[in-house]
Length: 73
Image (cartoon, rainbow, N blue to C red):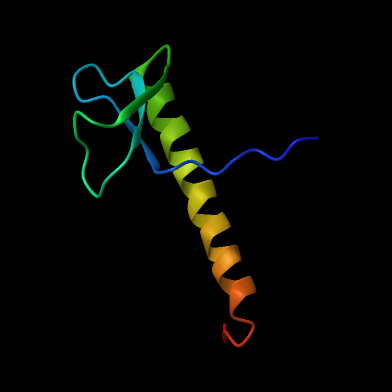
């Protein structure tokens, strides 16, 4: 199975209807963010964004912990 690449930024929902998904390229949402999909409802879009962003945060945390074996928990 091929590894899924890590996104270049966090996901966010669109600003008008809330069904579109964008890759947020900077600290704040902007018109330069990249469109990457559309969901059937704003609720579903919010669930996908929360799940993907949560997974990205967990992957970053694991990578940081692997890079520094001296981290105390």
